[in-house]
Amino acid sequence: MTMAPKASYGISRRALLLGAAAIPALSGTLLPAFAPAQTPAEPLPSWNDGAAKQAILDFVRTTTDRASPGYVAPEERIAVFDQDGTLWVEHPIYTQVAYCLDRVPAVVAEKPELKSVEPFKTVLSGNREAMAKLSLPDLEKILAATLTGMSVEDFEADVKKWLATARHPRWKRPYTELVYQPMLEVLRAFRDNGYKTYIVTGGGQDFVRVYSEQVYGIPPEQVVGSVGGTKFGYAKDGKPFLTKEPKLLLNDDHAGKPEGIHLIIGRRPFAAFGNSVGDRQMLEWTAAGAGTRLNMLVLHDDAAREYAYGPATGLPASKIGTFTQALYDEAKKNSWPVISMKNDWKRIFPFD
Image 1 (cartoon, rainbow, N blue to C red):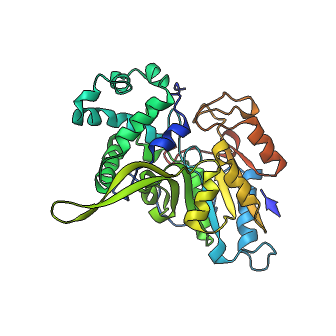
Image 2 (cartoon, rainbow, N blue to C red):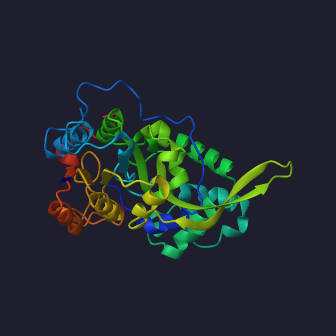
Image 3 (spheres, rainbow, N blue to C red):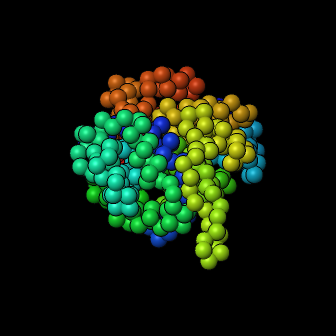
C-alpha cells in the first residue's frame, strides 16, 4: 500500500543552486539542536494526535514488523528529508543565501575594485528592498564570488565561524537552533527503528555537512545536496588540498533530487518528507517503488509561531518554499499526508 512577518528578499532557489556549486566540508562545535537523548515512551511527543502523526507511526510499525506484509529489510530502510522548510526555517531567505550576503564585505575587502560595482555595491548598502530587486545574474555573481576560490578547509572554517555568530532576524537566535522539534522526533523515531535518515536538499551539500551531525544527528556522508567541482593541487610545502570551483556538478532540486538520491545513496527511499514544489519529483519517485511507502509534505500555515505561505489553501504566495495548490491537490490525490504546522505540531522549536 502507499501511505502516503518579515519581508522576503525575493531570492530564488535556482539562484542559490547556481551559486552553491562550490561548498565543502564537515562538522564543528556548533550550538546543537540535536541531542541524542534516550527515546521517550511516546515517540512523537511534540505532535498532536491526528492523521499525520498516525501515518508516521503506522508506517514505522508496518515496515519494521516481520509479521507484516509491508515489512522492509533493515538494509533497505532509507528515509529522505528535504532541509529548508522541512527540517528548519527557510524564511525570510535561505540560510545559505544569508551566509553569502554576509560574506560580501570580506570578498570586497580582498578585491576593493568590487566596492563600486553592482551588485556588490547594493549588498554593501544594506538596503534590503534594493537587494530584493537584484536580478538572477546579479545573484549568481554574488554567490559565485562568495563560494568559490578558497580551499575546502577555509570554507569549513568560515561557515563554522559564521554559524557561531549569525542570528536570525526574527528570533535573534543562531540558525542552527531554528530546527523543528517535531521533525527531530521523526528523525529519531526512524533511526530507532533501523532506518538510515538522509538529508536531500537543494542547498549546498557541503554547507549542510558542516552542521548536519550536530544539529540533526545525520552524518555528513548522509547529506545529498547541490554540489560543485573541486580542484586538486599542492601547496608550497607540498601538502595536497582541494579548491572550490564555480562548476555545478549536481543541481539537487526538482528532478535533480531523485537523480541525486540514485547517484549518492543508490537505493530508492521508502519514506520522503518535503515542503515545496522542489520536492515533488522526490516524493513521486519514492511513491513509485513497490511495497509500503510514506510521502509527507509540511505546510507552513502558522504565522503566529513561524510563517504562513503557500499559495496552497489560500495562503500567501512565496518565492521561497513555494507550495502550490497543484502540489497540494496531488498530495491529496495520492494520499500523501500534509502536515499542518498549526494543527499537527504542539510546538515548533526545541526552545518553545
